[in-house]
Length: 240
Image (cartoon, rainbow, N blue to C red; front, side, top):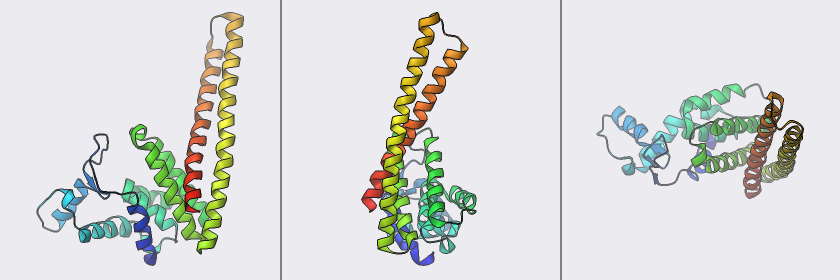
């Protein structure tokens, strides 16, 4: 929604600090979320000389965020709450990806459910990035915090918003516990199953190796679910 832009911007700027230029970050030199490449293009389009992104002005920053990341995803007409999640994704991963996620969740009629699905898809995308080992934990915290802010906005009032995120925190806590127990059980079951096979034959066949691989994969998948929900629980509790 048009009138929600400043609130969405404020949530994103909580995660876009000062200057950074991490060697593993493909975006390179970045100032408050604006990369050098984006800043160069912005100044070139205005017929201005290039300069280091450290020199970006507040006016330039505001114009880039509004025109480059909000307007290009139709932020003015998005439902309140979804606009926050979509805008943050637009800034962090590009307007094209944000538009794709907006379209892919358009058939979800319930706004709360749509925001949750939108952010779940975003987490899956981030996990697949080659730099997840470096930035993953911070990314997941950012997504969870943005999701919490989005849910509060969508709820319609401060009281309802807090109730929604409190409920989500409780649900994520239950999911984390369940997944952690499942991961432990899968690992134990795999070890026991393959141990029995070795005792009988001392030489593993395709079945034994397959069982071990399935157990490891299952335990890893459940461990990921537990990890995500613990982070989500923390951020939802913080928002509540």
